[in-house]
Image 1 (cartoon, rainbow, N blue to C red):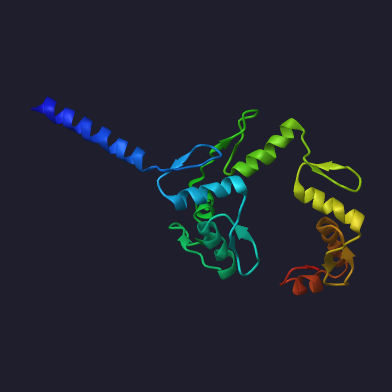
Image 2 (tube, helix red, strand yellow; image 1 turned 90 degrees about the horizontal axis):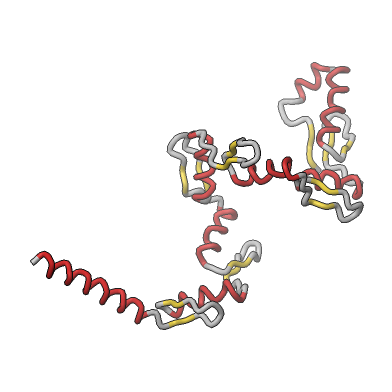
Length: 208
């Protein structure tokens, strides 16, 4: 009896698999992948065509799937549905909550193969790897100088544009770099430390 039962189970599984295969009636002409529903095929086709039919009414950014648009909308509404059970901090996306959780667990999943240093986030590992490879992927279009980090390139670009976004609240002098503003602020502290301390309940600089 057990043998017959086992044979019947195998037969029913095979029959089910055949039924599922038979219902996949929609095939992608690009990659031959098959789908059970036409709507699933249409959604898949956007990965080939690059079509993005879902547009954000706030900023006109476009998306290939409605789910991605809905996630994006949290950036405008400020809705934060995902809450950390440890500290009650809230996030708009599950991925951000998962990254945040590493700060509680101390887990460092990403390991450098060169020096075994470990990192909580993949982006931090990638940035670290540039110290081994010497690669400088960010290039200034004005003078061809290259940088390891985008932030360094942006700071460098201010030397070409002449832009000075950092302003001293004490004397309104402006600077291209935050480091230069901080050095400048020391001159105020040395001259009148009491005044600077009392005024510094807020930031000592403003970004224009």
